[in-house]
Length: 614
Image (cartoon, rainbow, N blue to C red):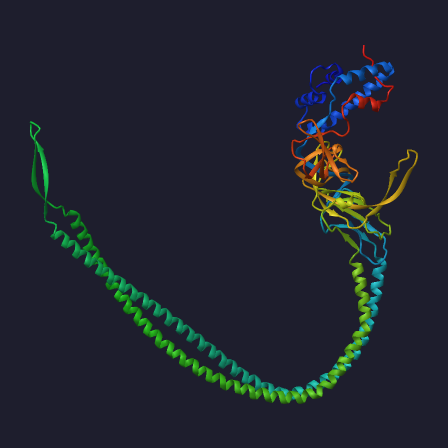
């Protein structure tokens, strides 16, 4: 409906048809606007019309009081109009808006983890460079640390030489004690070695005998299995021969008993008279003879197979008997090898006992000197431990001279130059510019409504009308910074400023967009609650009684009204969900923000307002 048509409809005092202004406008709007806009406009059109009527009345106030009286008189002649709206169902979303920033989903600040401060010797990258994990970024000039390490190593070398002299003296004394005992132990050791060699030979022979026995048992089992298989083959071949003999006998019996049989034949003469005669017909035995011939041929083949099977069985039986004899011989060899091992073990035990006695005597002499050597070693280690620790620290410090990238990405900030002494944490910043996310600082009053997993709609100036979707992946449990926000009071001449905490919220993007860049401003809409196919009414039509109960005014079929208590759920910009109460879909409720009567409009405008009609 065009604006001119709407203005014409506003002249409701000249409309003699029994119809409502807003209904006709709504019907026209249904034809001209999309479904998405209908619901919002239907809620707004009554308010817009009311505002336009009020504006028209305000303009007409210039004409004088006579127009007001005329309009009021005409209104009294017209039935009072009560604006209503129908209860319906739709999806409701509770949202919260915030302004954030597009950042990298993967960002790292590269810095040297050194304990001291050193000047930057060389910077290898600049802003915009693409780097891979492990690429060098910059190098520190650690000349002073290299000199310190050199002095530490020289001091440790001198100390090690002094310790070596003391250690050599202690070791020489220990060596003398060891040499004295070695002479006594050598002979006992030789005897033990010879006994062990005999023991090894006996054990080896035993193992070989056991292996031979196992092989003989396996061969016997295999021969037994082959013999059993051959026996089964003989049985099967014999059964086949028997089966064919039986079949041949049956066929021969059938052929001999075939004989003849009689059949009736009907003949017709020239005068079409039928005559029935009985004739004798010989039975056809051709098929039986063919079967008999084939069966005899099969019998000959089966007899040949039986003969072969019997020959194979005799061969397998001979092999099995040979394997039994071989296994028995192997068992005797194992018994003999076990006896040899027992004898060798006793010899080793005797030689070991002799060596133990000799060694114990020699060791008693060596132990005291070995303790002296150990004491000298501990003393040397204690004197050099501190020096080694300092050297290790210096070496670790020097190993950090070259700082390398910890991730793939693009260099987005370089905060150092050659010659500068820098000890900050973000000397070089690397961002993954292909993987982006949005972040925002949410006010302390709104952060309780934000949770991980919530859906978010994102718009930027660069992407225009495209709505990017994302999901909340991180909600900071602690305040990230304080923001100063102004809270306007009732007075128009004063305001109060107070510091409020904000909390970081990160949102992953469901899909990338080539138009996005780091640092862009993101307009973010968080969907904090959602209800599908909810029973809804305009939020402005929900009223509260003296007891704090929520209700709406329902118009009944007889044009009377009643207050119906409701329990409300979530709300969007225009509608509120009804979660409980007696309200039903398609009920008619009375709009609470205007009653449609001329008296009400005039009361709001004042007695001096009006429109003059000619």
